[in-house]
Length: 250
Image (tube, rainbow, N blue to C red; front, top):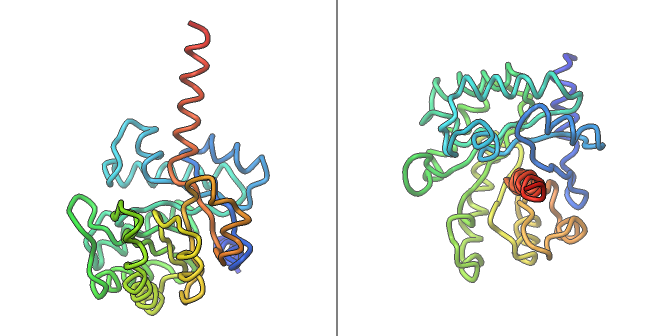
């Protein structure tokens, strides 16, 4: 077994419903080393922090080759599995998408986040087209952990409407699983009862973004979550801490 396959299998095995792996998202080799040295079992980037740390806006504004270089430096710096937030894959689909994912795999990432919103456009890809896109991603590597993200809940700011989105979310979870996804990511969903319903019905291990005081590791574990990530918040906190320390000197 190759070292890559070993790390990929280790990363996949961390996704246990009810015992979520915690991914405190990082943005470069230095932050990855800090988290790894603190005992993290794996590291995962967030697209907004990676872009912003290099002076770019989110939404695939950081050049793909530059992103691959950052991923390569992270993978070379830490001895734990790396997952990269790859947004929409820098392509609509087909062979171009497969090639793009291949670059991230070549950089050393054993996992990616792959979202169903149309980056640079509006709305989300339909279930059938997103499933085709996931098949193109899977064609890049059989060991890759594909964390299929739906933006259903993130785009609906009225949380009172989230219950009405469950049926479509589960349709997407089932379709994405059939297309080769490894996990199902529901950022923006913070209602623990709804999260529990998703976890019970999803054929894929569920990832949530930790937001608010109620979303503790113990609470999401009880709901059946397999992966707890923090998105841009670690970067925001780190940058605010840097600014606060500077202000304290002035």
